[in-house]
Length: 269
Ligand SMILES: [Zn+2]
Image (cartoon, rainbow, N blue to C red; front, side, top):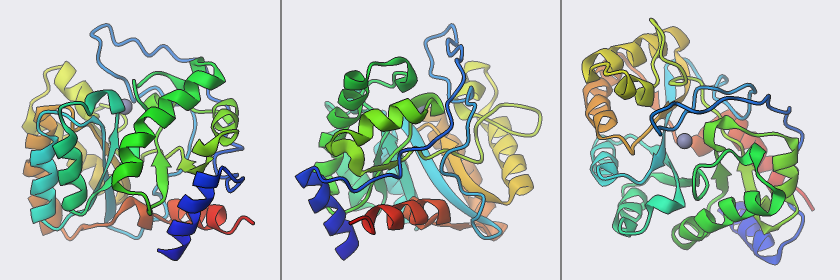
């Protein structure tokens, strides 16, 4: 905790504490338009902080794009089950749902930054990138002032220019971008929840596809989207199966690549 508090203090002072955001490979241009207004987290061209080094049968659950109408219900369900999760929030969804953020933290989960408006950061000017991060940061900093700050770029769209823009400001306290290992694409052997719902794949079938992908990968950071109610139903369906099969669930802060990035950041002079 001391390290975490030191990090927050340095960040407040605006000191140069981070190189963790720099040095990522550039992402290629992508067509992210789904045609239905839904977000696309599938079209990603680079690897960022992932969970491939987690032990066998170990998962870290992450939920993006909320808070949504059933996020509080999901946070309480997972809390009751003793399963920690990370909620990468979009600040635009917070007004009217402040109590949902409170519940996420009360249930032992972790709040992280998915930016204010879910825009593609790599297409924005530097000042707009920083504003997208800092507006959502205000919600997170209020509830988790002493914990590390983690970011996941919308669509995984991230490059060295984006990192440089953030590192030039107090938002350099952020570590990321956090990627995912499971849940990125809907295929015959894998799933992406938002794409399931957009293509009218049933909750049962989408859950089976997540299980298939998890059994194949056996470890990793799992991506889902709590902004969709059906994702909450699906999580309630597959969690007992995963528990029965012996899967363990760890916080994102315990994922080796994330831990290393935090250690690097906090050891900077
Ligand atoms: Zn997203």
